[in-house]
Image (cartoon, rainbow, N blue to C red; front, side, top):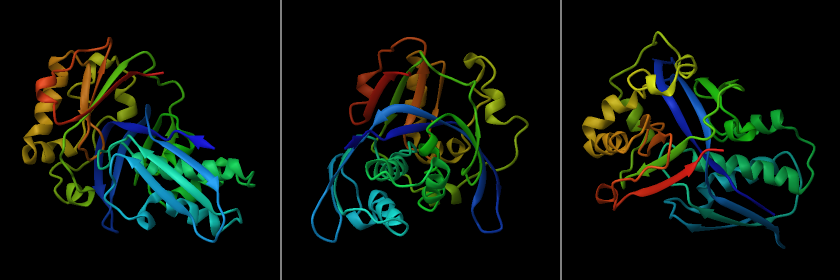
Length: 274
């Protein structure tokens, strides 16, 4: 049985304050995009699960992979056969695209559906939250306003980017999420929340729909700013970094011709949005 975990982008990311526990409250819109990994399971003999990862290399041992952690979380509540798991990675890691979180949540759904376990999406989302703040998003997999730690969702059923063309560019830059938060220079409540800005025409988003990490990360990594500028030169109506990076995305009316001389060492993906 095979599924295809998809990535997400952040439309705006406002870090609105630091919490007493040291974490930060945010306001952002999560939007699913059809950049996918592939995840397959088969029953196996024995008393252990086996995970093999293909495609883009992951700098982690199998036991630390969120897919295995998802299986273990389900085993704490339900009995089901041990698994041979094949994961083909196409979504870049450390990109702000939620690839690992998506793999974990799709694993939860895959086990539930394969073995007809008595658990609904709401209960599945509770398990997903134990794996990561954004993991529950991939259970519903629909546009949401995410607040607090990024785990409180308000559905946006009337918002769609269907028909737009998207380009994702990720340079070979690794950004540690904890370090990115520590280095923030822009924290505080904004006058408009991201979902309110998204009600306006996309041509008005530039300069209004902001990712607060860009303020501190672009000076530290000028390549990120260079790639964002390139997306605008190529005709993007809106471009930004996703999450804490290092992937950037641009939204276009029509399929653009990306400047290949500046992206030769980058992961580049483009598609129409369904």
